[in-house]
Length: 417
Image 1 (cartoon, helix red, strand yellow):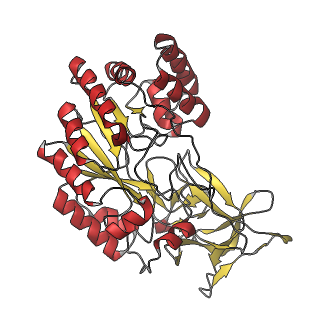
Image 2: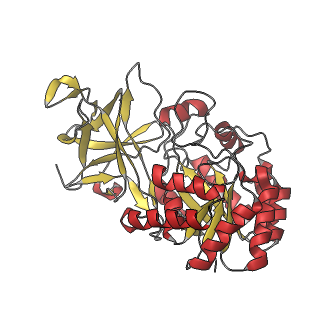
Image 3: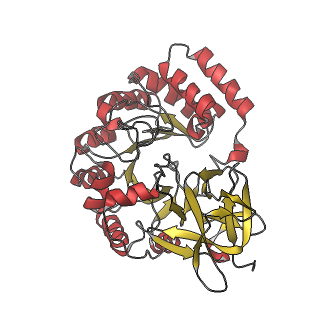
């Protein structure tokens, strides 16, 4: 295979992933198939995961004719099918294209992960780019022995704190990077608080009413007290360089639903220290509560969005609040001179569709937000596109979109100093 053309990879019936050199790697942007070149890929980042996709055949391209080909049979053993594969990128990496496949008639929905295109060129390659230089969640920086020791120390020192027990489970059972960082004593620590939500997202990773696909993690079942929250936050802030404490985690609902608890916890923290960045990851649905939190000592707000267009946003989030609340929450923060970022759920082919990109740029200009965090949307692409019911033109490219927006770019909540 030419060095500027990664080749197709597929999985056999036993889950072995292998290269098929005669076909070029093909990626996907929305509903469009895109043959890839070396300029489109990077080496598979350390800490990424590889997935075999059941009831889905891989798609490649004949480099001589340009024909798009579905590889239904294993070319090395035609008695068995060939399965599509995808990568789940390590943190700090944003995907630029999706994996390409053809579903069989009995394919069911995929679990709630992001499915990035991958191929082979002297090693596994993927369609992605690093969007944050911070190594806070890089796989080779985690020390499980240190984390286990940290869990034991925290439990010994705070034996009655239910949030410590919850986060210990997240760290040791789920391998949650945020929880592991808390117990390793570095950078950003999590403060999950809310077992309830005011949206019913298509792809909620902690709760699903239906059985279309399982949630990959369990939601917190209690609301910690302000004292429990403050205990954890103060311990982390006093021990860590550039500490960030974040409400709103993947293992909870919407933190603003228990905003009064968070407000009181922030007050307790700020009575003892003005150090550290206190951040809220939120859907920004309650501007009045955002204002209360800002007055209590909140430093930054990160708003999760899949789109700056109301119709696209509401199709995914299925909210019980008004879309305009997001803008009002931003204004409450900006009136106080505070930091606001968008946690943008990136879906290649939609996020970079012309009308979506234009709406995003207009939203940024009108609200004067400080940063975009480019996060991959965890959902079955076919399920998502079916729900959107939109005819999308070919996207202009995720990489080009990111490079065209002249504000701070990243993946993590920054320490504000």
